[in-house]
Length: 510
Image (cartoon, rainbow, N blue to C red; front, side, top):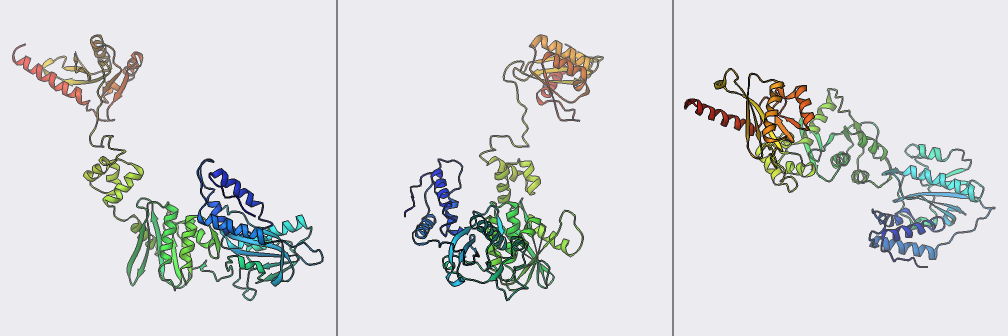
């Protein structure tokens, strides 16, 4: 029997994997065999191009061989029904079988589907297999298994995980026998994982070195610090592609590489990492990057570890807080121009924010922003821009200036059309809202009604009567910086020009 391998799109791959799902109960297909095929189901559109990888081709070869060579036995009501469960690299495999363990004949296979979580403990997989096997036996045969064979060593009852809550729930109301350490013939085709190994993670601190870990999203750095003979030591790694949680896990992985043969006490301020480590005290199925990273680090150690969580948001002075502060300071580190450039490339923050965040010079920050292809068209924070009108009567600037030569009406109201540079000035006794409105009416009779008028934040410009006047005429008022009485640049220049001309005329007797 041959499996069609004419795969071109994601839709074709989905149909192939869906067809193979129907074989799980009659053909032994371990979860690790299906993993390369599951990986090809990732995508965004049904028409995406897909090609079978070498691993996927090998999986299909194995499935074809199993279809051609394997067979199921017929159920004999006169022989007790047994349930075997095994933990493998990809999850779990079970079988309803009859006969002595060494010559057991499978009646139906039990395989768990693709893991839906990032991390699943091995004993949880065994518990799910037991519950699924018991349900299948009752549904199709009408009886419960007489014996359940667990892959555990009976001679180690204190260290064994046989009393796990997952197994306790799976064995609720089971009236048969529980046997251990059986190896039926089909185990030769499975990549069995010993689930009854001594735990590498303990829930209480023990005698040994203490390492503090932390990570910083700002610097994308994971660190581990420890004190030895009164001096603090530090190791760190930087990876901008990792998330904050992954960096926290990377910090614990760094710590696991220290003192590999001794018991290690690891202190972290990440609740996520602390709970993940406690859950990974035994063999498991890991599918996320964080879980795989931690699993590899634990596998490389010979000594045990204990993970302690401290709350960094509510610090309590003492040993743990001192070490956590050291790790936090090491994670933040010193900013360099390269780090600042990477931060700008990811967030595109301005030069002023770079100066404050990275503690670099303003010149370097402006250079980083200016060399960014996405930000170089925008002005830098220190070079202010005051747009002018694109046509006449588009944008005005208005200000009041004091000219002592014109007493008793010493106040000049000055408006400038920013496009044509035409200046209109009127003389007033004081700077009030009434004088402002009178000036604008005079200027509008000469220049027309503007679309926008820019002023400072003087009380005459922000009064209700002036606001109502602008709204009535459809004029948009724009004020300067709050609490700053400095006017706009163009009109301030016009004030100087106007007063200098008046001084010249006064001297000449005009």
